Image 1 (cartoon, rainbow, N blue to C red):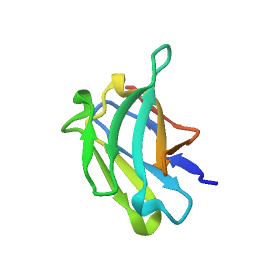
Image 2 (tube, rainbow, N blue to C red; image 1 turned 135 degrees about the vertical axis):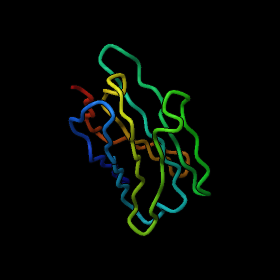
Image 3 (tube, rainbow, N blue to C red; image 1 turned 90 degrees about the vertical axis):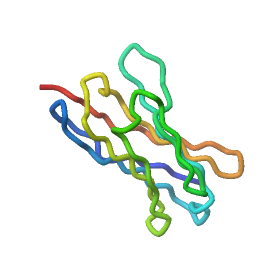
Length: 115
């Protein structure tokens, strides 16, 4: 069984930064595809950024140049560095891991951007 745990959320002022972490259990992490999503109140869940086993990354347009996704295979962790945060970035951020075609979701971490 694979477990996914997000952490690092919080309350930050506009222009601030947070580093979100996604810890994925199991020995197959180095081959795991990981994707960050977010869901704001009243809105659908949307993909934010992803990283493959080969370190190929992808971002939604609204976060390009502000967010950076990376992975540390020695720690079974994917990071999402969020910079220059805006009020519209406020959402619950979820991490999805995919191994052998099976997807695993975490419980999410709240990011609130407010003055």
